[in-house]
Length: 324
Ligand code: FES
Ligand SMILES: [Fe+2]
Image 1: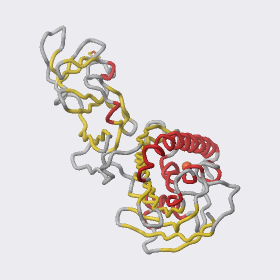
Image 2 (image 1 turned 90 degrees about the vertical axis):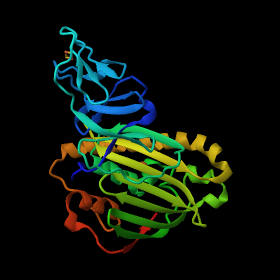
Image 3 (image 1 turned 60 degrees about the vertical axis):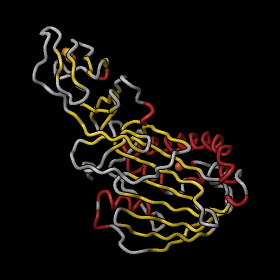
Image 4 (image 1 turned 180 degrees about the horizontal axis):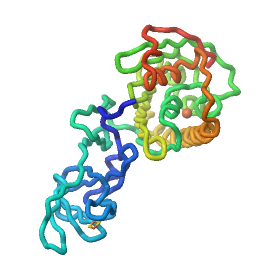
């Protein structure tokens, strides 16, 4: 799979302070982000003199000064501006990345022509970022598919004790990925049960946009969007980096529900992280085993097809049923 033509989010925008260099990871490479002179720049986190991370240095007057021997570089173009023992600059330049600040995130790319996904422009109710020591496609699957929620998020989203309902799901292929529409189901978890009646019967739509966007949306009976969860999930040094943007829209109840929901969402993310890391360790111990998927596992199987085996993609609409 190729991420080269896509900007990757590397940092929440509000976590990058002015003139405070910050180390982030772009795939398996350290990058230093600098917010200086009203602009964000990104360079390889490596001083060309003796290899010290520039993120350990200090920023003054739009220049970053290395922590080891004080070489300085322009934050605008990465050119060397001074070698202290010479008291002048030399011809050398830091490797730079393209940077975009958008959707409350800082995105970088190492190619000229890279794209940014289309996400919600509203201000999210909650933004969360983290790392998971797990394979990234298993993490995207976890974000998009619901059959683990009865177990991993017992009582919060769904419950393994509640009687299951048979619902219809429709898989729809798209140019850029796929969508799965789920018929509405009665609230069975704490999150929805606490909301007013009109928000207790929700229809879900899961969207995958190749290669790294997962979106979950819930609509009420009147087709009003009640909540939307955007996951930007990409491979990183230790496994997976994720950024989640969560939007709630439950009318006048939104501020009240948000306070409570934010705590629940953090717990849900923690539960997912835990199971994904356990899964990863166990998969590593069984390198020759293959997963078994049946026709209710379409999300995971199609994700896999999109990422690694394009000829296995389903190209027409498909209905299936689930005991949810
Ligand atoms: S390693 Fe950076 S100035 Fe020497
Ligand atoms: Fe989950």
